[in-house]
Length: 118
Image (cartoon, rainbow, N blue to C red; front, side, top):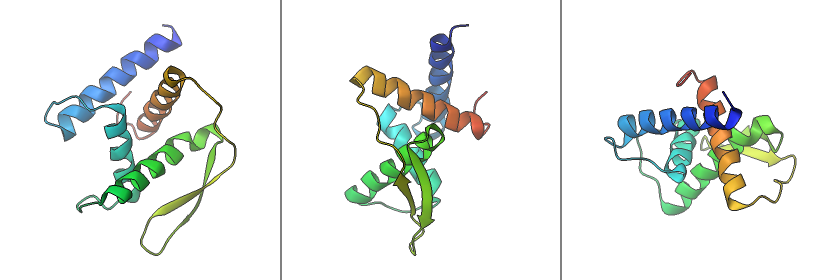
């Protein structure tokens, strides 16, 4: 199976599974999945977040899923329990579609490592 086909199959499986678990079957988009990863990584599941905190959660998720690609490195957890990352390399200039593929691949790999999908 081609790498792109495998990524698409895994992405579709992941979207379906997360959508059923967290959105009563309504299809989650890429941003919603990134947000869920941020909440997971923060570990403070049962609380309300302000708009700027939601953006911070998405940043945490992006850093976490792109860490294996060498773009970010975990640095420390602050007094409020929020993880911080340092930039190791600038992200390459990618077209919108290429960015989407990179993020989907990184997210699929994140959930593969957690054994959430196979």
